[in-house]
Every structure is written in structure tokens, then in C-alpha cells.
Length: 144
Image 1 (cartoon, one colour):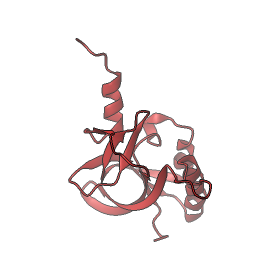
Image 2: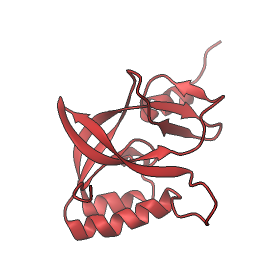
Image 3: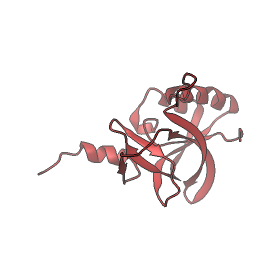
């Protein structure tokens, strides 16, 4: 379980977002490329969230591999903090970090992912399965 040093990111941690927390990936991981995992996106009213699914639905993101075990161990603590996993006792974290099957170029491997850890009831599903495409579509001028 602890010998998995890959991470799959699909949202604000993707390279195109230039999120400050992306530095943890840039400094300690190597981008292997675009990949997909089984799951669905929903919009919680503020931002897109990813939710594990057994349906034939996939989300697109980036697969990274740690350059060293030490770097992974340090960076994952920072990323857990960024994703809000460290909550007070009795509180439910917004996200949970799990191991997931990732598919890149037809090859299957295992990686860590941050799944949304709250209910998605009543949320709109984002059908594209790709946050980048979704946000680009949102920002396009709408013609009446």
C-alpha cells in the first residue's frame, strides 16, 4: 500500500492552473502525461468535484510519479493539508485520499487520488469528464 508513489490530479493541481500548491508536484514529481480514472465530476455550486463511480464514466487528469520516496513523503503531507484532509476530530474532511486504478496510453497502474468526501446529491454532473474542457466551455461567450 505504501509503495505507491504516483498521484493522479484532475483539478486545481493540474499543470495548467498554476495553483501555488502545484509547486509540490513540480518540485518532487515527474509528469508522466494525461491519464484517466473511473469516476464522475459534479459541480458543487462553487467548483467541480470528483467522485468515485462504478459506472462506465471516466475523468481526465494528469499522472505524476515521485522522483524519490523522501520527496513523496514530504509532498503528500503538504498536499493532504492543501486538500483539507486534516480536520478536527468529529469533522468530516472535504476530500479523502485513496488508491485508484489509472489508465495511461492503455497501460494500467495504481496512483493516489483525492476524491470528494461529501454527498453529491442534487449536484449537476459535468458530462465532459475533464475540468479543463468544462472551464473553457464556461468561459466561452454565449450567443443567443
